Image 1 (cartoon, rainbow, N blue to C red):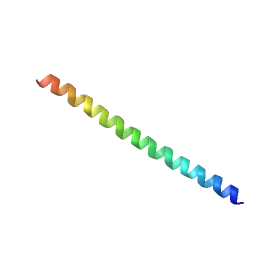
Image 2 (cartoon, rainbow, N blue to C red):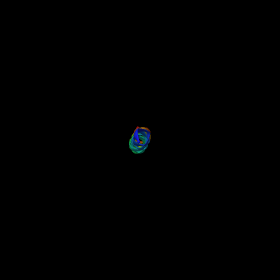
Image 3 (cartoon, helix red, strand yellow):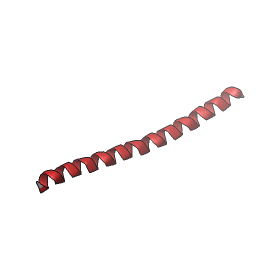
Length: 46
């Protein structure tokens, strides 16, 4: 019984971890796109 509870908890933590990781990856990609766009605009405006 205890091992089953531990397996369920581990799966829940894994799912939460994956969801958080996806959000972090999206934020990093978003910031990277903004950085590149800003760099290109700066080049264009000069």
